[in-house]
Length: 133
Picture (cartoon, rainbow, N blue to C red):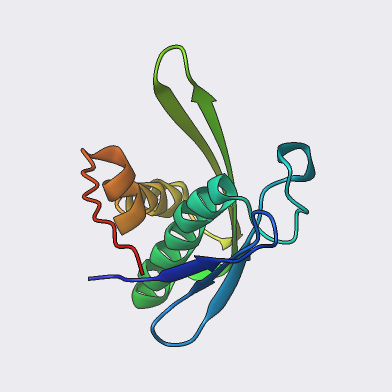
């Protein structure tokens, strides 16, 4: 199970997100939404999860195969169509290295199998409880 903790105080929309291991990320809303843009927006964090997972999964696979892949650059855009209740992620991956077309095709398949991609491609259930402290 993956877990994070977030807290927001009186400073509008600045959220501190902590992992159990002590890593910290700041999230904030853009200025045009009333925030101060001091960190990633919630949507940027969502897209970042897909980018990070894609990059790490491809890197692990290429390293295991011993392929000459020097760098992976991943760009992801997310577009939300409220009227259609649809979200589209557009992912562009640049593989920098000496790779054959067969290796590139395999790396694209591996990217599509990254755990975050699988989560976002399947049904999601969110269960919520609330407490007053």
